[in-house]
Image 1 (tube, rainbow, N blue to C red):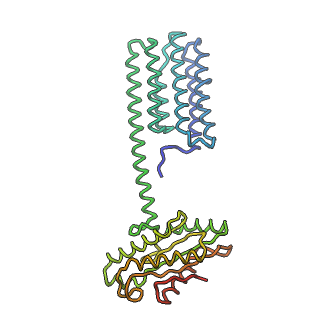
Image 2: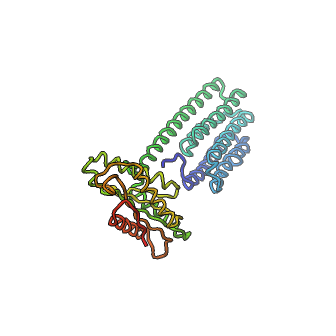
Image 3: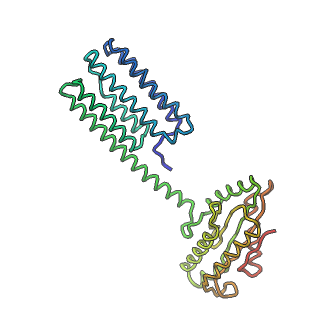
Length: 352
């Protein structure tokens, strides 16, 4: 799944680099600005900006960081930006020195395309930033006749950045949807909507480990449509696909728990892996599958009793021990399925 947010370790490195860059600016700026401004400048950089970034760095270690990541970004970048506005104001008031406003644009780029703030918080930051800079240039003639020009430049640049952020968010959201669809397609059998082999083996292994750890019953059902090849030959592959889809729907209607893993084993054969069912309950559910087919009344010249489409089921319900494996359980259920077919089909058999 695609995510706009960067990883914590990468974020921590970026924030530490940010602190270093601010420190480098301190070394350069102190050589340029008048000495009378040095104290205020150090308050802005060392007292506000670096602590704001470093506190965000420390916050990344908090267990609730992911819940408030975007809020943390907004607070940190806003503090850094307004600390810069404050030194612009103090530079004008104390020494009539025109301090550069371009840092605002740098902070915007950093917030949007390095920290990757989401659009909602990016919009909040732009509004706060423009409000602060607007009050500043309306209150003091710092840039003279260029006050409105500079405000417009910052406003247009931030709006363009905001549009870029919106486009990035929107593109990644579309990629998110496509990625989820591809992941789903890679796990699901398209005809039945059930899990394919790779998916049910993966999910079934989780159910197996859960049952083994808690020492509860693991149940495996192997289900096979009776005389399916004959039905396919007599009625055609399209009708055969319809029968396979009906079998899937029957299983989905009976095995509805979140922990029930239903898969298409291959062709007309299906598998169900679940847990915490007694042998009696497992057999009762198998009988419901058989009864559901009898309720469908789909003609089949070679069906159970030579009348309707049916299925046969093999079941194993055992608490896993240290010598057991999921593959072994599947083999036992498959052997029970073979017995059910040998005994006349349209029935279930439980493995001993």
